[in-house]
Image (cartoon, rainbow, N blue to C red; front, side, top):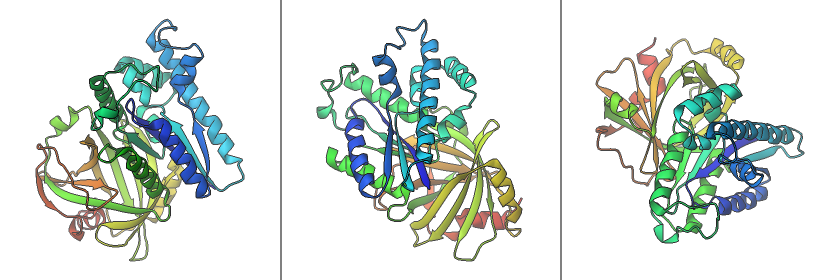
Amino acid sequence: MEISKIVITGGPCAGKTTAMNWISNAFRERGYDVLFVPETATELITGGVAPWTCKTNSDYQHCHMRFQLDKEKVFEQAAKVMKKDKILIVCDRAALDNKVYMDEATFESVCRFVGASEVELRDQYDAVFHLVTAAKGAEEFYTNANNAARIETVEEAAAMDDKFIEAWTGHPHLRVIDNSTDFTDKMRRLIAEISSFLGEPAPFEIERKYLIEYPDLEWLQSIPSCEKVDIIQIYLKVDENEEIRVRQRGSDGHYIYYLTRKIRINEHKHLKTERRISENEYLNLIMNADASLGRIRKERYCLAYKNQYFQMDVYPFWKDKALAEIEMYDVSDEVFFPEQIKVIKEVTDDPEYKNASLAKHRPE
């Protein structure tokens, strides 16, 4: 049985309601049971539980997070006993969306209340798809008419959209679906991104990689839409045409673990499968580490910029350069770097800058 749990999020008037119908139709046709976890805030507020009915916003946020997580557990439990072997759980917003409505102290209190770190709350989902508000790039279609609870102006909606992206930045599979096309094509791009993630028909990964000058880390850490994670990557013994690695990923002592298999198709495209594993699985797998390759340790700065999602890797053995990657739907899409990031050259097809090569030539 394959159970995937994804998040559909976004700013006000982004198309989430319509997206749910598209997802339902598209993936039920492909043999999935599709389960929808309703938006928690709507359920609570409709039922009389709101920030203005509770004593404080903090009291409300504690209730909200507990209900969100408990509800998801019920859906996950149900998924395990269903008849089909492909289950897609779709969360209409999820654990980190309400971080937007909390100050840091309240958010830390909520995390303690549910017994989970920010990393654990964020990375429990397999993928996050952010639909950009119409207030950014399709202003003529922004409206409050179809949602009585929506009161934001265009400017406020655009600012809220940025905050939702910031809340999810750091997730290993965050995709931003913008308004560069008409709305129908926006929905088609969303379905294509989800399909690619699920491996329908095959899990191809399209990425471009750049050698950049060593970035200003203080500047990166000052950006709300940038999140640092620590990564340890270990390669396992495999046949020469395949790459298998395990990865520890997280921060502040809170980590999750992945097993990734990758087969090269061409210079831009790889056949890639990835699954979450337990810490015990990780520890067992690294017993089969390729002794000819060292561990790769790196700090990864995940940066959302102009509806793109960059991952910049800073290595301890380089003091003058770093690597930046971006995954994309179409290899012909233009890449826009912040002016503070200085690109030396593209190295997508240069084997010298593959992590496996770096592990071979700079073993720990």
